[in-house]
Image 1 (cartoon, rainbow, N blue to C red):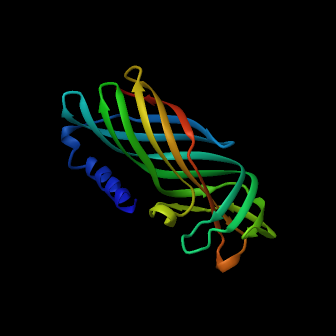
Image 2 (tube, rainbow, N blue to C red):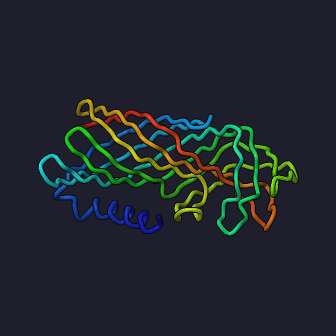
Image 3 (tube, rainbow, N blue to C red):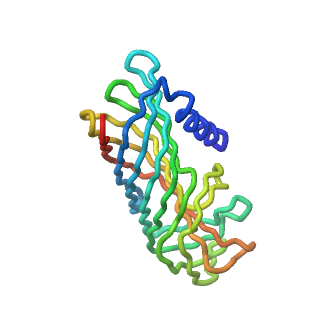
Length: 223
């Protein structure tokens, strides 16, 4: 996962320089999505640019970057200790809570005519939101009531080493016309809270992960 992330970051950087003369740089695009899974709901707004590199005939490779705001509304979630070195049987149960994140994202896609299929992922940014009180337990035995708030820093490191709240999508998109596209996607969302104090094994971070089904629209300001 870490190698894939580094590769995506590299090709996104290269697309802004080496390929500039041979590619079509789309104008500003705004992407709005909503998704749900297991009584959890997420909405996201992303501003993006995609460099589309001509390959053969109508086939194009798309490499890009953007900024994504995500509101991740959780419902009755049992969060696990998030750093990989800690035991997974430490839990923080929250009845509700919304994590807001603002992250930089990178994109990789293939285009064929009006159809696109691709992948995007957050690489880092900020997390914020209100404090929540939840039940902390170890091996199924409740220990205490703890107050937690969204982890303030988000960073993609790969797998269980990720920090904070991150959002990724595998998607297909159809451009209805030159400016409007519709999208279906399978998301992968990390939501992380940090408790006000250190708990078992000096840990204070707890996360939940779910994969929502996502629908969305994309608007391109210029052709």
